[in-house]
Length: 155
Image (cartoon, rainbow, N blue to C red):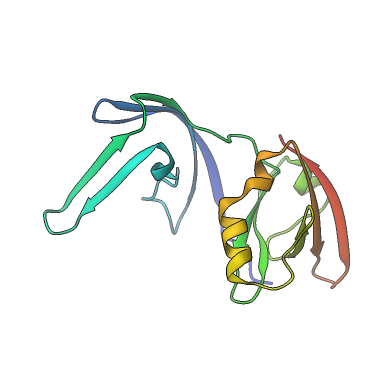
């Protein structure tokens, strides 16, 4: 298993786009994404990238909005070529405490089977509705090939 890239979570108190304001944004940064602010901006309004004129437009759903889903289960999933895996494990979380590590294969989240990558599963994991619950049951395969199950609570 390759050494995982170091990533950081940052709380940004306020981001303004013209007159629009999004508060309490949590962003993930790394060496690869140091110039990216992954806040899923399209969930807060319409984003238009005008490549010809090199212009960015943002039309907010509301002028003032709070960033949603700030809590975490201590890990972030990653889509692989044929499977799904653990992409990030945050320090000082329940996920780290149970021994979850980057690269472990995700087999199941709640009742959804993720043993094989499919277009349906891609959509399910992208929409991430199971992350909106207060608890999550995760079945995964560790580096020894052992299958383990854990119940995680949002932190």
